[in-house]
Image (tube, rainbow, N blue to C red; front, side, top):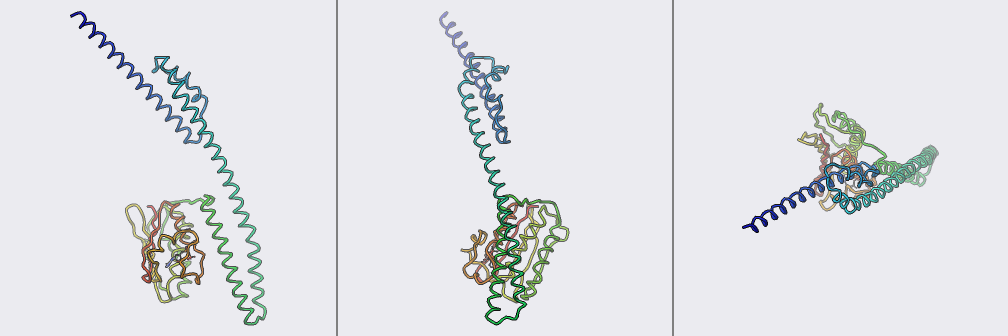
Length: 325
Ligand code: ADP
């Protein structure tokens, strides 16, 4: 009977010791995870790891929760020590990369503004020369050359301006400032810009938008995004056609529907028209460089929205511009 009591006591003692050990390990793992979270938070905020993380041994030892000094030493010397060392290395690499990318961005910024400044004057001079030339008495052939030179100069000017705009948007030099404001006003400004062109081509324009619709958006850039789609509507619609604009309020977004009765876009081309410099093969005789829709997509994305198209060849096109409410 005695040996049974002895075995029971030993088994109970072993069980209690195991429970205590399991409890300690659990607490250590918890502390470890907590510290790891702190360190990762610090790294995510772009701060380097301080002395307190690398000298974690003392700190862990000083923590009241870890009573067993040997366990603390083991934990520090092995897992925690290694983790902190690796994290330190990763943190330094990240910081270096961030510094590099900031420097590259600054260089790009000054390059873009140089291009923009340096090309402005020669293009303006070229335009002036062409204007002066037009005032001369010219033969038919010379007039033809002059027309062509003027067209190409306009194209060059447009291309440069838009490329600068595009790179500024892409590199984050241009910041989109969204503010709660009246969408009707923004839409009216975009439509006003297109009215003369539409009238010249005898294209009807109709707009349906609640006057008091407030949407969080950047007025200037949203106007540009809407204008690009309207401009395409006029460009790719035959005289006598029509363009309809309608604002629909949804739960999360305001949907601007811009529909035209133009040539339409075949489904196989629809994904590509939003990419940079893409133009359908059949439109090459029309003016344009293929970045209007790309810019519109970029602007909407920066505003937290997106753009979609639905169309069929010869069936007109509808563009849906979504702006978050
Ligand atoms: P661009 O008009 O200067 O060519 P965009 O980026 O604005 O460039 O448009 C890309 C292409 O999408 C156009 O070249 C054209 O093929 C097609 N597209 C855009 N809008 C329309 C439209 N409303 N109707 C038909 N095709 C269109």
